[in-house]
Length: 143
Image (cartoon, rainbow, N blue to C red; front, side, top):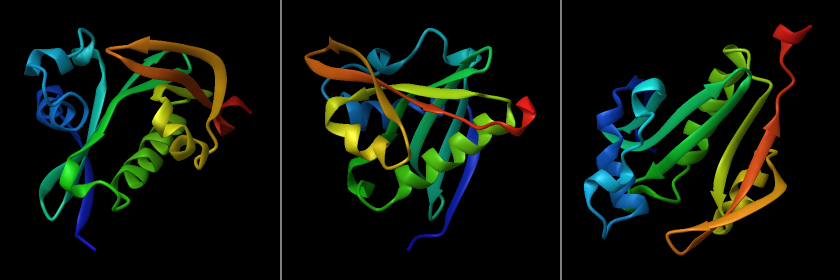
């Protein structure tokens, strides 16, 4: 297994990986989010190479992660799971009571492994089907 570490990164460092993993045939601008400057972005480095990225945004105690992506050659090695666990823990530390995402239908089983459930809301964008999934967090800050 590679030497792994996770750190907070600048938004622009996420763009190359987002594009490669999610929309390789589209221009780089297509993966930039208007709200990127307001988000918290994490990168997982495997052997000092940025491999997986995720961007987290919050409104009150609800946190949404977006543009969760792993470079193609590193997919299936557990990097995404490690980064998602980190992101969920971080959201809890920030007082989140709910974390959610627009999941590709093809990724429903992946998110379900972490306790996410489908909300019943779905949509189609760029010819891809999505479902909104969420995880209710038991937050000790609520007590």
